[in-house]
Image (tube, rainbow, N blue to C red; front, side):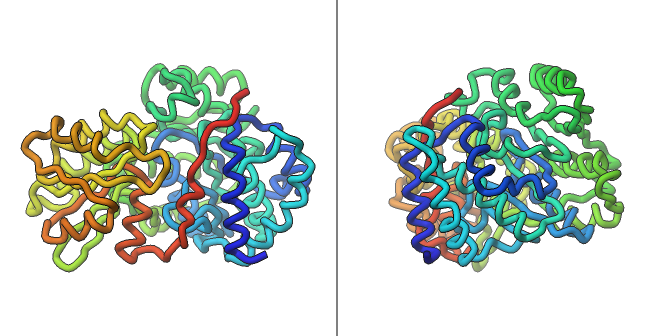
Length: 427
């Protein structure tokens, strides 16, 4: 099997949708030899900040000399981003081999129990990290936590970044319901570390932790922490993510010793593309930020109002594309008033919000702005090439496309479509 054939096979698995439940991934992992039993994990859930926190944890433990696996989703450009060892993407040959090895196992699942793409990819990652003899795996949930395929592992620590409204059609329409799904990664006796602040959310996490006899630590940011632990990622919210990563490392000091020097080194050297990523093209600044839900849009607004790109740039031009199943009206209402010009583009996804509908709403949200529609982010970037500051936001899929157009990421040969999914069942 070639890499291209493996990618096409994974595309074919999309017909099975997204399954919420652990029975199928547990069975598939068992058929694959339960590779998770050979590994140690830090399991991370939350609405925003999972990827950044995981990247910080990976960087700290790599600075401490460990061989660290990193499992995240979605990918921005290449499918290979999802599985990394010491920040090296999984080789194409290993993707092809692992898909070929798992194919025969899938025949043992009749009808509606057939593993989804994410379930297959989860077990692929477990096999790969076990083969690579990783000392530790930083393990990000896909969606939710309680019924997410990643929840078949028993970690050293469970990390919950924060809780906000997102994926409400699957996770629930209140913060308490969403928190209950995220808190589902808590395991008996396994320590929990969280940066969540809302009383109703903390109440749920505290209750689940108490029921599981799991010690709970709340990560806090103060002036001393910010001074002693400068985060390598930009934005005030990254200080919270950094505090969460450091609190996790300290909770696990008895299992994995890490020095303060190594913590500092890991935080300052961390890299995580597409999150308040500021790049320059000629004399132009381009700020790339997923801002893929309401909380993310609010964080981006705070960063822009705080002068992240410098005060000399003035009101930015905004390139925006949003998925239709997000609360795009609220997101546009937050971001539109910040911009002098707004370029509306579709997201390269079947779930994209309609460009014309977005444009109409954006004109209402900011009557002073010039609002124009373009076929894709490449055309929008060309249209805004004379603007001193361009902000690209609204979807991580859009950020991946922009990174590819700007030559900041190797081509994924059309692999962004593997991020597509739809619900199959919930139990």
